[in-house]
Amino acid sequence: MTVAVFDAYGTLFDVSAAARVVADEPGRGALAPVWPQLAADWRAKQLEYSWLRAITGDYAPFWEVTKDGLDWAMDRARLDDPELRERLLAMYWELPAYREVPFVLARLQAAGVRCAILSNGNRDMLEGAVDSSGVGSMLEAVISVEEVGIFKPARAVYDLVGTRMGCPKGDVLFVSSNGWDVAGASAYGFRTAWVNRAGLPIDRLMAKPAYVVDDLNGIEELV
Image (cartoon, rainbow, N blue to C red; front, top):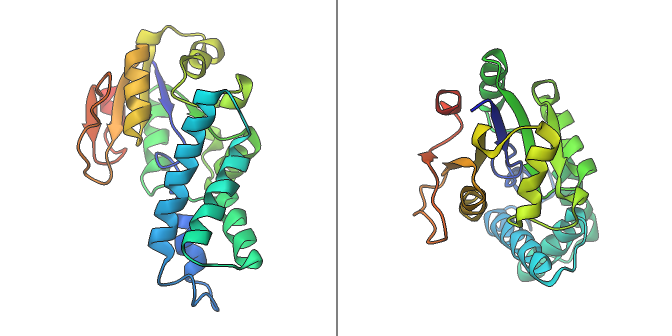
């Protein structure tokens, strides 16, 4: 394998950081006790809405899906605060990378492995996270589902890797923290690694990951 393709949100970038960081700001007494649940609800709805839109063919940019997911999560938490909503959304453009990410990408780059992102995020969202985390120089491509107008795990999304990277499926190690994404990529024909940060059981889906890891450390050995 000569190409390592990474999912973005939850794999390279910490999606919980938006709520966690804002909750620590002064004057966030309403958010502080509920931010873990809000972060979990926000992510869950973001994913659920993307799946439903993929099934129905009713594509909308991931930014719209992200805002809809936050609105649901804030409603459940009884947080009626437009300023807080805007602050949380602004943080999503500056999500930090997990601690090991720059070191892993640097080792892959030094080993001659071509690295890319394949994400449901729309391109400007991804560029914001890539720029703020400082990993752009280690990525050959940032590939967004915007190019095909459907979310993962649609096969048309995984097709983008071959189109952009000019490589066969067998040259790709696909890395994601989402079990459903890994299942889709495995069924598509990629070699896959599931980043199981939460220690969850393997999803009962059509295909399983080739590798299961706790974080991204050691990914270069799998390539």
